[in-house]
Length: 208
Image 1 (cartoon, helix red, strand yellow):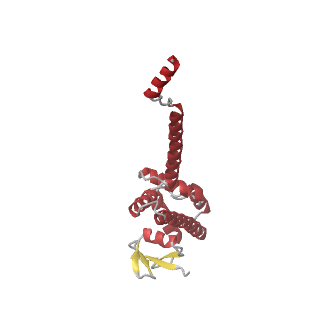
Image 2 (cartoon, one colour):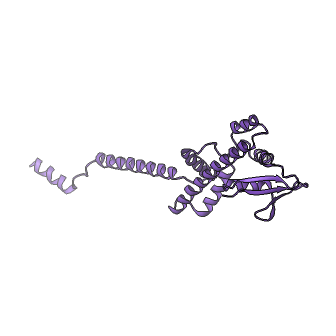
């Protein structure tokens, strides 16, 4: 994939030379999330401003979502210093790639819930919005994905598959207990009294 060249003008505006339009830091961040390589250069001097621009993107992301990037990564970027912009670029792109993979996996699992009829489309939309507010974990953990989805469902008061299974189990246990009580009651019922005529006839036979 070719590197997208972004030119930075004296008025601090950024210009995407491939799309032929001005672009924001957020849009550059989106390009990187999509897997593109980005290079930012000063329009007049040709100076490489990629590292500075990526630093600004990180700063803005941290302001909006504290903890969005792992602290260890940020510390390594500081240690790397100004002479290793390539390292910074690779680190940021790798981190954003992991986030993109995680978001894709979450979308896939939510779509699966919808297809199986376990979640309505409107509920799926609300769940995606709810999960988007959470911080992304630093590593791709599939168990953590399930936990986040279930937590999001609970916050929206939507029963998860585990909730439904648990409820079905409780209903089965309750049904079995009621059946047991009914059988016990039937066994403890007194025998029906004999017919009054039979009792009278029996008394007459005894007196004779």
